[in-house]
Length: 358
Ligand code: SAH
Ligand code: SF4
Image 1 (cartoon, rainbow, N blue to C red):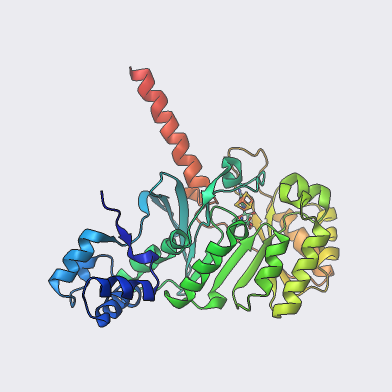
Image 2 (tube, rainbow, N blue to C red):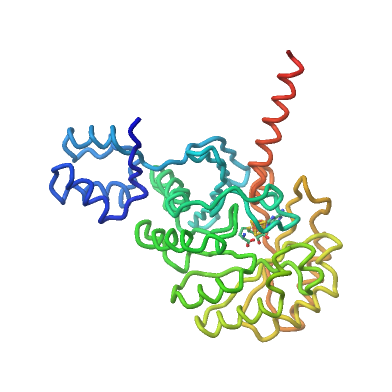
């Protein structure tokens, strides 16, 4: 069987080479490119101003992407969560979050699974399968952009906060970010990359000269507590992490966002709030507090509102600003890795039921 060429994986130059190698004039490649990225066509058939022979050849020899939709759930708040199957059978998730203003934010994955093992994270609980290619990262946003376009809407923001650790897959992540900006027209300031705290890559990222936003998953303000939640903290302890954050702020002049998943009775204590205040005092930053989304592999629950409010008050004493974020798509397992975990559970259940029927 001939392998199909993935049009979404080609640069503009590679697409031109392909079309020219088929004996077509170069401007045809520009037409195809415009159909793909300006008009966001969902199929080759839609490319009506191409000669029929070229459309036929494209249909036979190329695909638009490689991700196959395996499951989709829509939440009451408008959040849409998708599970995709990759050509090798791996599964990844992406989420689209519409906001009341015109914002449409895609949350996309950078790896199948994750090697970082954060204890409260559904993806961490699954372990690592493989890195995604730049095309696989990019395509997740592309598919949402395409579907929005069909409804007269536009994808405005992308956060790399789905499954996986973006900085563990640094090069592919950076290539995908450049394509989001160049090919999908998403402004750098509308892209956020979130890392668990891989110190060398935070420094490298600071040197890229991009306007892309950086979020750091902090979750605890002392090494003992952080190492218990995020094993990577043993390799890159807080002092090194905050040094790298300072370097980022000094080099880019940009504010850092710290993510804080609030876990009842664990990291929502006044002691942790004071430790966090001391750690971040004077640094150009903001703290996002997100109540824990409970997962099967972790026994604790989200912090109560009063505890979170007290936490925010203490931070304010240190001049550290914080916002409590609402969890989106909570009714559809829209936390990182949770839809995949839920689908696997159901598949297992179905298998057990089948066995019982035999
Ligand atoms: N690997 C990167 C990006 C993906 S995770 C990172 O860790 O930053 C995106 C965010 O979701 C992280 O801040 C992560 O800590 C958080 N998260 C993971 N599991 C969660 C859960 N069960 N409830 C709330 N937040 C969670
Ligand atoms: Fe990986 Fe991020 Fe989940 Fe940690 S929180 S296991 S780094 S995806």
